[in-house]
Image (cartoon, rainbow, N blue to C red; front, side, top):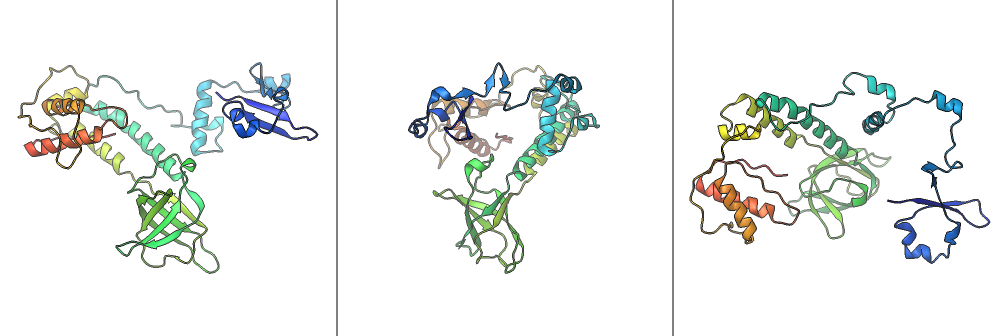
Length: 330
């Protein structure tokens, strides 16, 4: 936890705010020969110092509105989408509606869908808000042309400035607001690579009208796509209305019903790895064997444990044996 310290510099009416950990331990600050005995905390007896935050009078305290911690959390969440929201906005219809809690068991697939569909919508709205909020202005562009003759824009998108990690295949919108010499312009492209210099290589769809003689003053926006969320909603709808979409065992297993464990009979391969992929270790082999013999399996583990290679080996062997399967990765 960081604590803020405050000190007044000698002969100057200037105050310095500094966190105790880790800022105060930085060697560069130690070299300034500050008198640490003059430093004092900003918080005393669980209250900010009076010169920093004025203590309200008794009359002001009587006029204050008492709100609960739950209301505080809700108004803070509402500020993310509406910075001007007030407590009165919490009383509007549908604002305070909470989604139904998930359960360990469900009566049928319709109840399953009715509970999870609103949760997926909330996740989609949050994902869209996060991506659209990561726009960045004042971007400097370095222009190039790819081997396919398409225009490529190189620019730096600092990691600390966005919470979303860029990966090849992501779509971005490059914009130029225009000036006296150049009209406004924009084009969508996809990330083709991230260079060692932390540059993003964006291959543009537009081939005409690209302002290649301009290098400053561009803006970058994330392009949000609902594809993965649409697939989830479609899968749950199919699960609810189509009784033949999954087997009876998987149906009851997903709904949390008690069912007798089933085993899938098939011929196990001699080699559990897949061609062109790294060799898998003993624990990964055990995972492949288990999945090939069970109708439903869950593979989980920390990053770097080979879940992708293991899943690829499972898909290879199932496809080779002609088995139908569904794969969900997270």
